[in-house]
Image 1 (spheres, helix red, strand yellow):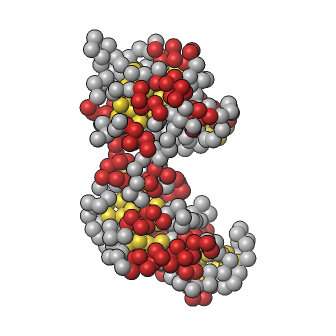
Image 2: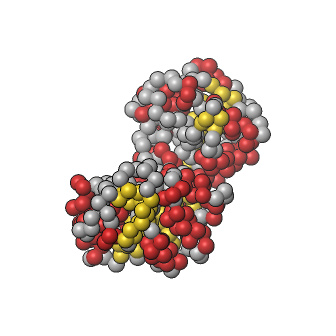
Image 3: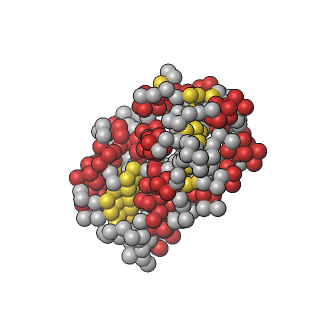
Length: 399
């Protein structure tokens, strides 16, 4: 069983503060040395604040980007530390190396209520390879371990897997606890009717999610370029739209499986897009039986929007992963935005995940993401749980 933060005593036997080492997810975008999107940092604050309120000393560790074992100042965590200091209105200690003796000494000499942020874990290849020696050095930073980096929980790395054997007291942060509650423990017990909205480009990354939701969901609504492949499997000519030709047979099998379950697969019936090439600006609309050879389908059309939103309005629980169009382009964000409005306006429990989907929601209207019951910070981890799988980092916390 995963241990919750509220069951941990942050004071040692001689009544002194313990040092808690927290794996956070500060993999945030930075422009001109300033964090441009602090969503993940904001989501880490409840756990950090809880530990501060308990009088703990805090060491934070994270990765950022994919430096592949090389020091890359463009991927430093210093901007994240500066943003955290602003949000907490307190100074943050920062070490330019995560396992140096100097860094470990800083952690050992922390006072109650102080915070120390370590430099990017992936400046060492040993982080990704789950190296034992590297994990043991990281473990020297604290006496209690918390994992609050749900976004990397599907990876077996040193900072979230190998490190756990060096701690007797270990558990989940508040963010991870919430993620596990909404994406793992409650799926099969969700109030129905249940609808799954699945989008994005590729079927292969979502196959297991679709399969897992057969007989759980009443409806699976498919959008994005994924829908093109399903429609192609139904003998529709999708013009120049992105179709995963090697997954057409997979789409056929999934639709056959759906026909033998209680779950309905709902596909778009019209599209907005462009003619000739992406970015041509030659906007075009068509129903599925009238798509021109030169058309690229890039968003669901008004008929499909009405079809999807009618189902959402009748649903008690909605899971959503993947935009239903090229939402980063305002010309093709309408379908995704209408779905956002429909979910927020309905009385359903709404669980949304996936980096592109979260970004689309946050870009649409400021603060609207707070209207969802739960917005996941993890892409891959979210998909794994929605597929009914276990997360390696969470399993290691149980040992």
